[in-house]
Amino acid sequence: MDPQQELFSYFLVELKKIYRDMVFDGYMPPENTPYPFIYIADSQQTDDLGNKTAIFNDVYQTIHIWNDTPKKRGTVSKMAYTIKQLARSLEYTSNYKWDVRNADQRILTDTTTSTPLMHCIIEFGFKSSPKAKKIQGGKTSE
Image 1 (tube, rainbow, N blue to C red):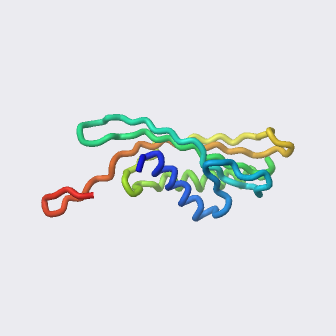
Image 2: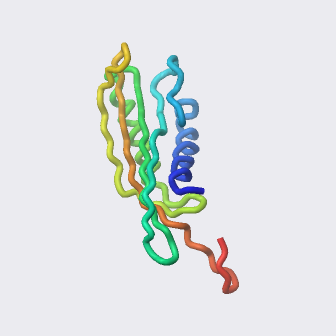
Image 3: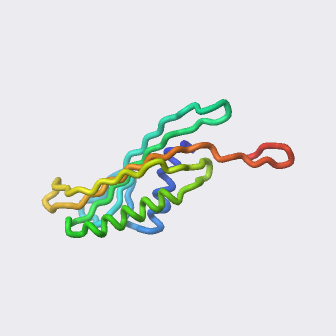
């Protein structure tokens, strides 16, 4: 699996364990969706041909949180903290080793709807590398 897809899937699965029906991907939720909710958004990957045996990647993932009133900023902050802890705890997925390089967070008032919203944007940067292969009986396997 492609590193950016594996990272996206990790966030989707792990966030749904915590927030169940509050997590959306691929499309924004329907108009009457209750707040708060999380939207797993853009992914980006840059390949770096690091050395002769492995390709290292810079992978970026953006996650949004929306809440229905600026008075609930604490709820948004707590959710952002939980998501950042989830990112920092990531070491391995099925095929890759991960190192979080940065977690940029912005919280702002969103006035694009008739009701002002609290909007948090978290942008993660990761370095990924292929998982080390196990050596069994002198042979390399995955």
